[in-house]
Image (cartoon, rainbow, N blue to C red; front, side, top):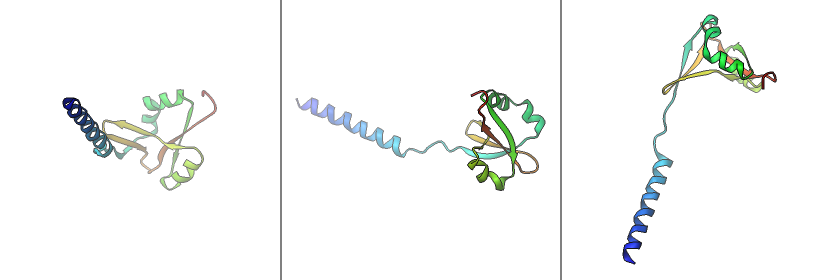
Length: 105
């Protein structure tokens, strides 16, 4: 009987340590960087093709208008490469955004 109590205590302790590790372990930090692109690059990109097939429309927005654009339903387009997340920006500093349309939904 004593061995069962010891095993149960060890299993409970392991479960507790595992729970705390998952709760407080360092998360993967994804850095967001700007990637300078032009319209020619965007028109040929696989990202555009994939989003267009899902029914998204695209536009460029000045960075100072992004909060307003988000209220209108737009979101910033990102490309992810490993632990880096790239925000697509043109040479004028405008950010590429998209919005789901009713077509192709």
